[in-house]
Image (tube, rainbow, N blue to C red; front, side):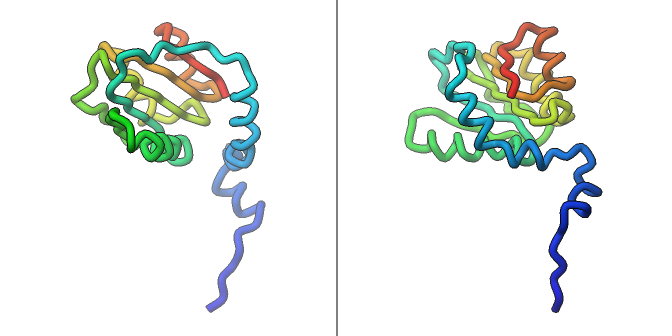
Length: 142
């Protein structure tokens, strides 16, 4: 059996927006984020974290869930359109989208905005940034 390796031209046909370039830069983005003076976020009394994101943007939820697995805090990873019914004023909803236009993430963000939950949003712009700014939500561009 012969296996063909994907080349850059093949990848660019599939990934027309060149998102792979952003994923390749994640280590640099993370390092820059640690050295920046980021806006502080009040996370007092949080006992439930909901992380919403699709694909690579959603993988951070798996990492955070693993890190917090030994803590007394519940983590829900949402990789779809539905916000858990357990969201309340002690919940932190984190929405992540590299493109800023992920429909599932935007839908969860819209639903979260209608609750008493605290919300933090991370994206590189798009509709999610616009929604966050319009609704005065904590937003951090990456």
